[in-house]
Length: 384
Image (cartoon, rainbow, N blue to C red; front, side, top):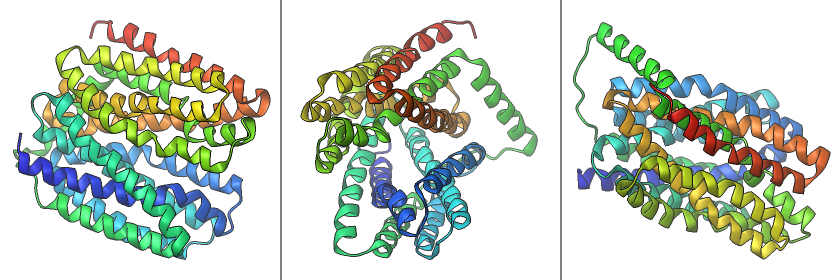
């Protein structure tokens, strides 16, 4: 492993998550502040998610054929230029366009950071990537903390310009390196791309995980979108307590990423992924059965498995399953299947809450997420 390069990439990824953490929690609040209705805010988020699907694949594909870190640097510079432009938006069309571009670039930026790390981590990928990926959790903790502090002390433009500075710094650090790639003619490149797509759709090792991630992601809005409402409206707790449910999750992610990653190097990665998938229904059932806001917050420490551990081992699992020149494209599909699940899940979970209440939503979320486990086992056992 190239220690100096990994250290540089760790810092660059830490900075990108600080930049993202500064603005991500405030997007919906800022859009409302600029005059958008709740429906319009949701519409912007939906448009942006759908718009990002194809470009993420294309960017991942491009990174397999070029110096991946130079591509990453260009994306980071694009984000640094884009973020301050939010201060000039004041209409639904302008937000829909700008936020779609942001989602395309930010999801690609985060996805390629993992692919770049895997370019250097060739052995013990679970433990190596787990240690590397702590950069994202720690960066997110700092970014979200600074976001709340700055918005209280200053105003929205300061948030966007501060985020831009972090994106600039991250982009520069990514651009400083890059592994040499063998040149290939257009015919060979096209052949590799076709082979990569065929492998993704036909290799049970790959598509079984992607489908399982999609099913599990259908339920994640039960945490990201509806947990604050459940704590404040159903359990009658304060908004401060509801925010703690998000504050403690990175604390669980850091050790989970390290130790679950190490464990995946020692035993089957598939077993570790299955173990993390089991944490989904357990988390939802404990959330709805405890009925105590403090206990509900403590239960969210399982986020270390349902996100941190699962992400690290899944990326290592996919990276082990494909050649080096297919990694960017393959990992982009992981992001897409996850995002599609969240997109559809927001409507499913929202419909259930509206018709049947929060309790039923968490029970159904537990049932749906449990189905990801037999899906992984059954599909992965098929012949390639």
